Length: 294
Ligand SMILES: [Zn+2]
Image 1 (cartoon, rainbow, N blue to C red):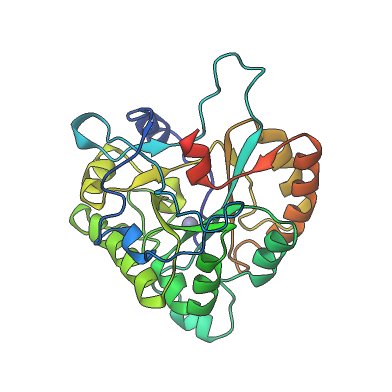
Image 2 (image 1 turned 90 degrees about the horizontal axis):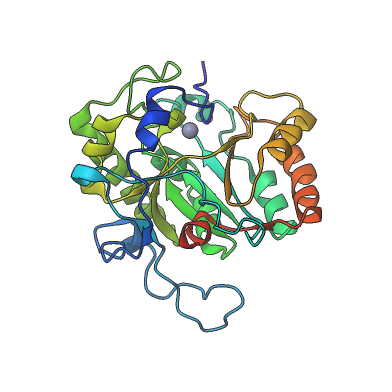
């Protein structure tokens, strides 16, 4: 069975998400050579709209009480409400579990190049949460995504195993192995030559608790959840996915969808409906880093 990812995590995850919600701060740790930014290199393509401009260090959140890994869910509404800018971050989880290599070798598609093409054609900025195993399987695509200034690549673990039990039937990582699994994904990105890697992490299945947040402290990542579930995992009706996204989006929302054809076959079709409609409502698509920067 494919393990669904991105379905809403109930209970403890919601509670834990409230543990750490400080204001965004620029983290001096972000560009550490051993961290994800080290994979970006110093000679990135400049950000769009600023020929020759230096890449900005992606913002991170300060750790929570006791050093817990901070969690970002959506940009808090600005005071004054009416002035809130209509921005939304579309995020796509590129799922591949560590043991799915034989299935990929047998022809099952864990990538979704048509989705990436559509995001490019529609000129949509987005954040891709990639597993290390995915980057190993599709290094050319991983590089291509990271080289495109529309996108940034974030960490979705190496193994796509669970950081809390239960989690949709995913095998569970031991607490002592959690930070190493995240580091292994960053290492896989470096090996594949992926640029524009940001120090954000999405828990497989969105499943986490305080123990997981504590175990990940050495990885110095900001965990990124979401407030809008696209519902594209195992969906067959693109219109239903589009409706769910359109009903859920508010200014500052983070939407979780997937870049994994095998487990989310209608996502590209849904995006073709969602993007023009949200633009018609005045929304601008931003990467998580821009949303977090406020
Ligand atoms: Zn996932």
